[in-house]
Image 1 (cartoon, rainbow, N blue to C red):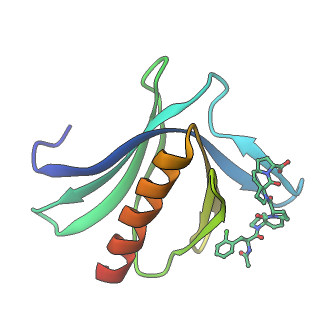
Image 2: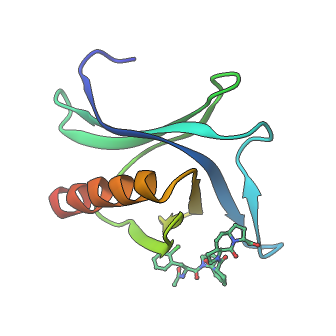
Length: 112
Ligand SMILES: CC(=O)N[C@@H](Cc1ccccc1Cl)C(=O)N1CCC[C@]12C=C[C@@H]1CC[C@@H](C(=O)N3CC[C@@H]4C=C[C@H]5CC[C@H](C(=O)O)N5C(=O)[C@H]43)N1C2=O
């Protein structure tokens, strides 16, 4: 971890990406849930979302949270967002995780 990044929130969720051609959601990795973190870098004053598979630590999500992204809390345990190129989804393990993640994401989006 870059020591200069603050972990704003951390939770367990399955990272998904929408395949527009097939019109279906695909898992970003095949082996179960990931640890999803919202990070703030004081050095660059930027936020990013990082997801690492719990089983093998594979990085399945890693992108900066920019002004342009649109975030949608589709259900109490499934949130999704789109940027210029893709649509991502998080299937949370619990409603509480989803609530906390959503609140943190909304605060970030007010500040980017
Ligand atoms: C205008 C727009 O982009 N709309 C987006 C949602 C959205 C709204 C506002 C800001 C950002 C976003 Cl991503 C949208 O509707 N999208 C993005 C691509 C797929 C989808 C377009 C159409 C389908 C209709 C059903 C819904 C969907 O995919 N859902 C709803 C929540 C549900 C929850 C979990 C995932 C997991 C597997 C299951 C499934 O696909 O079988 N599924 C879904 O069916 C999810 N859909 C979508 O989320």
